[in-house]
Length: 414
Image 1 (tube, rainbow, N blue to C red):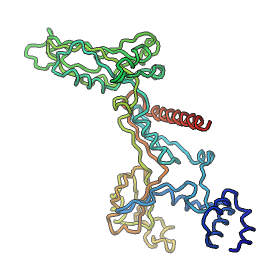
Image 2: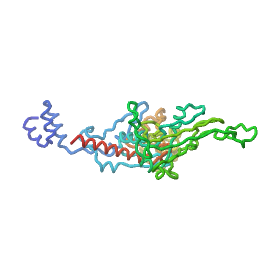
Image 3: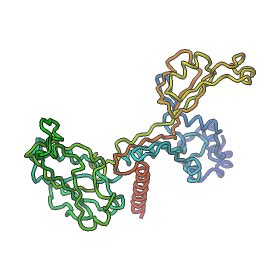
Image 4: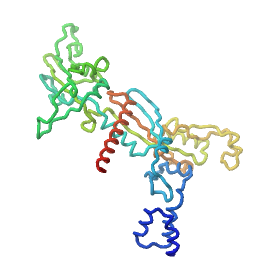
């Protein structure tokens, strides 16, 4: 490329790219033409078939391919993949598959893995709950040591009014260097519970009775024996069904015999799972990618039955080959009308075990994958909150984190 030709073409190039061109080492004519034409051409628009192909993570017999996301600027030459809010709104969907109080399953479609994983981590570690933090032992003559009993009490999930929990403030714990630096217990940062149980003989027990629960009173100490003692404005927020109480009243805490007693005062504070697992509101919060199963060539007869057994029940079904399919030339169904063929019914149920890839008769007939932007979440609540509410809380926490980041960025740019 001559200097004259460059002078004619370079004015068409954006100033930012032109300055970059003059700042680098001399290029070959072919490189120069590529840079100039790439800057002046309209962005390429890939076909829908190509976009669908890029969404699939390949699951092979021994490898996994096409793992990284590639829909970002600069990866595909000539294509513009800059983030667009309207495009995101059009492609994003939330679908609930199960919505029980303690367990929910839902799909987030159209998200990047980084955002989906952020929701998972927030669910486990950043949604605040209430748990026992301090145990004041007045009397403990059971066989369980004070520190072990205190640890057991701290792991009991507690529930109460959501409005009250939002009203409560954070309790600042004192540091080892400065024991006086912590917060002072008050109605807005500390919940007081009591556990006062003494085992005695049961005068009404039948002669010869050997069941301790009938022979003695309070032989077993359960979570239901913990009582809530509201102070100050707590009576306004934690009343009725919203009172602080264990999620499961039948959690066994200790076993006593006559003459043994437990008398403790329990202080509960607001915390998050990042501080201690006892504050985590979920037992599990996991996600998996939506399976993708494509039958490339017909699987018929006994092979179809064997193929269906390679998957969990309901993933693959058998259907008869229609006369229309059998009459179509080149369909590989010719002359096989009425025979059973394998069809994909519900890939959602698949575990992607790759069992079908072990058999030679299915080689070249099936292709397995996962859809990279379709995340199937499964959330099990420990009982403080209903499972669907937990997801909404994780969205709220992520919004607050983004707002905090934007404020920090604005301060840096001043």
